[in-house]
Image (cartoon, rainbow, N blue to C red; front, side, top):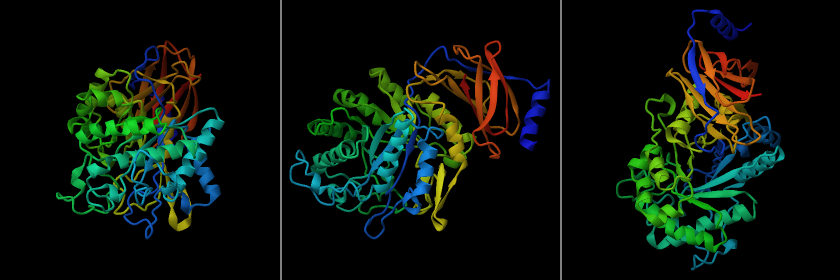
Length: 487
């Protein structure tokens, strides 16, 4: 018997061990849930693709059999089973203007393939696997940065979009989405305007250089630019037959900036932009590896939902942190603090090839270039605890916990084929006995799966726990996440 399991048994036998009273309320729903997300990043930084053809995701370094194994880990029936995928649009797809009229798209003058081979492969294969077991994906694509000639500076990663080129940029976005939908047959649902474009400090104050090479692509987008570009992009997409593709306001670094730096308020104050808005988006980066501060700020989402209650919100990138229980706690903050309908962690498969070192180095799978091999990291197993529980079409269930180090995430079936499910975490070094009330479920038992910090258990089956008197009794192991599915 392992030391880890012995601790649990000792705790269960301790009659004086007080139970924490937890609750997952399946009798009522909060927001609709679109599923958790996955992101493959291919070309994020290089200033000269010909001399440095960057491939950050790492699939180019592996053998085909290894790529297939990783795809199964993510999209297979026994894998993470995400419902959302994010794809980037890098600045290399239109080296020179295709023609003088942005309303007329010359597809032959665009190159959507060279810099996106492995990202498209990842999503294409992921979609095939997902549909094979009866699921589906929604895709959001984000502008990483405009081509150099569309900026005032006329060099790669120029800070300012040339006002005379705004229609050309709209055409650039439309060309990419049209290619993905019509050539690749990928279900692109949303188009996002920028990657952390709120942060003008990533360039010199005069904007006369591209800034630090450790920064990924973006351009500077003020709230007013976002609002005005909505009115250019919407008719451009419609003109090219993309009426069903919704526009999002881009992705500031975190939800604090989305509100306090003026992006949500600018849309709320403009009736036309508010009408165009299809999805609220932001990155959700918190305190990184140390979790020393939180930015689960709901005010921007709440402001827009007061005007349009049906609007959904997605956290489109966030840290994996230490790839431990704290990562699951961060997800709980995105879901219950901000009120999002989906959450997508940063780059789920990565090499170590980020210039200057990735400030968010956690991930699910690490590709190791030196041995042409890969490693499944703890982030994968902790993400699996939540991603399989929260499937598309379910609803977020209300939860309560009086213990600051015990968090819950609940998902009700909401009329889908998926069972009621919840995740419970213990972020202390001691076992915690809990009584978990589950009103509203029809289940007489819940099947459990667990991941622990020691990695002795990696989404390990722990058997069934009976529902007695409307509740489960369970001892939460130290530094663990446990998922329960209604039987």
